[in-house]
Image (cartoon, rainbow, N blue to C red; front, side, top):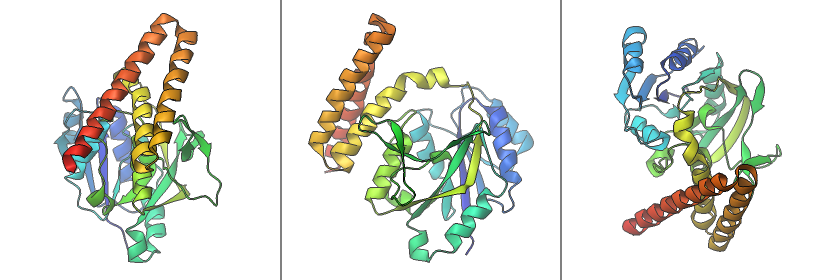
Length: 289
């Protein structure tokens, strides 16, 4: 069975990089069913580039609240059986869709709808990035043994069954960073099987655009996502609090040592922001009960 792949590209101020990604998708040995761009840009360059060179792409303005909200927005326009969210500063290997289709097509329908396929990433075409699990402090540094069940994936090269989004969405508090850990841990807890196919890959050419915009929130995302995983997804509340206290002390001492008093101020801002994320999450859970 052929999968019907919706490729959802969330972008912000990177029209030249996005064009290269779209060209790599057009060059696939098996075509995608539909291409969707959700645009968080602060100017019109991306929209104009698409109108001129890729008129068949479904274009929508994004919510401009970060990558989590942008991915959820793009989902509204997807109608395939499977979805891919490639980074806008990447390009897919020429047989990416074909290889994923072969793997998924050989599964029974029930298994296919419960399987998430993670590929890998070549950073600048050289360094391989595989899925890695979190350390206790939340860093993705632990390599998997080939026999281990995966709890994480490489988000930009991962193909999802549409069914998973009937149950789960991306956390819209996550402006940038650790959203793949958050989503993958919840998907695994909900019975989805994450499998690795390292023949499926994308090349990532990290764009400098948006880095200053995203930098202040990355560490706060680590604190929030890891606490949320321990305390709520894994239902180990004491582990969550132990992590949060140790991670806070670790970051403050490290920043104080490396950056002096300004580093300590940065660390305190990060802790405060992560506390806001956690409080908002608790309030949203309470509202659902």
